Image (tube, rainbow, N blue to C red; front, side, top):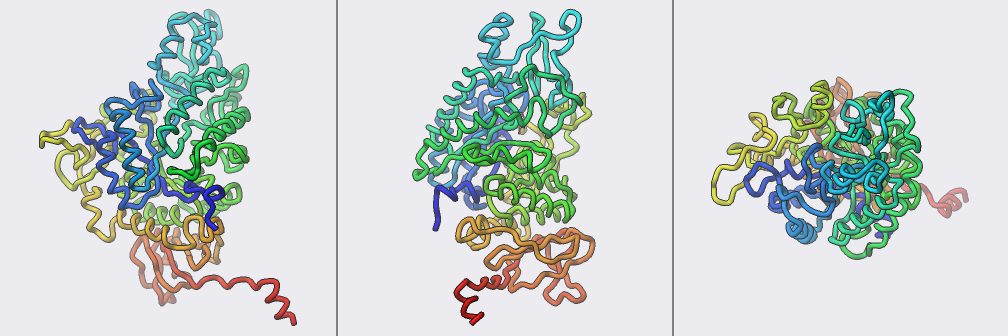
Length: 553
Ligand code: NOJ
């Protein structure tokens, strides 16, 4: 029987990631905003998503696209107001869509009033104690306190006027909080309650494997970025903190909309076992598994990634994801639209929950030729252009085939909108929702059809009865992925170079590419990089103990 406690809404939700500045602009200033998002909610409802995750919309000087938060309890005026946020919550509720917000606890903005106060205060003061200030090494203290690198390039330390250094694992505009200071904890508890009280359904926790640093801040043996546990990632102290957050989440009534509150940690791990401690009972409800992002397009790698994740947690507690605002868009990363379409069918056929980044449903490619002058990502600047950065997956969405900013910006009075904050490439309108909706073979209609089937097919999502669904690998050539889910569902993908005869089935429910004919495959075959959802005869039910006794006489 359905149970909201053991199988809450989030355990099989499709969550759509909105990057607010690039989703839709409702006031013509070239920057996406809450008004634009509210206007596009019917689109998201038609697509069939259960929730939206909004990346940071807080006041910010935008040293890192808003992940440098200057005020955790407000909305950046370029994006909207708190009243509009409440309006968004009310309207999404009417559409039965939940809202997840991004909590950024590892660091704030250098313009946060508490960091400004720390800069103005003396070394050793309580103000500095909220952050990680240290004296430097070497004569005159002019060397950073240790050899930690910033995730964006260069050292993780910046020197201030009085000679001390502060730690920033990301940009110098993002000073790290000191999570060993109880005041930081108390402040974040208030922030979490502030948003949960307004009605948000959950939190996406930024850098959820960060926050605690090893006491003494020792040098790294190899001063390189890595997803392995080290002196500032995957520290065991973090789990006690998450238990306190879980208690806050669980203190909200799970029987009233938006249901059991969730928190999904952004945990980049070198391997699924590193995720294990995050999934201990009483900790964060969920952590992302990025296995489908880090896997290459090989059947053996993907199969191993799926197995490892399922063995660890299942997709409910470790939702699947193909892309986000930090990585190359799947069309480009995987090597073309056919693969991205096949990957989408894989994503949505796996047990549990999945996240879809805005524009994936339109098949947007990464924009690789953005002029340097337009780039905004601190990674580009801190690596002196060696790393292109992440702007190419954050280009404002096209909504119309033509017209100013391809319909991204709307003005009330017919005036021309300002250019979008990142330039869109020529031909972007071909990917617009308006262009794709009438085309039955478009990316949009593939996603829409898959999301509809996912709701209605008893084997998909968690499986029915709830929570019973798992993946049963079926015999297949080494470059194919073929699995069954009960009752009566088969997924097949062809990652090889030759057509793959369809496995036994009763009906093709959905295919990412047109089927081809092939010798010895009377029902058709999947072309290379194609995938299909098939209806199969339900697997025979194993005999019950009574039946076995009867048969045995
Ligand atoms: C992860 C976010 O997804 C990314 O965009 C950001 O730059 C870093 N955390 C730092 O907040």
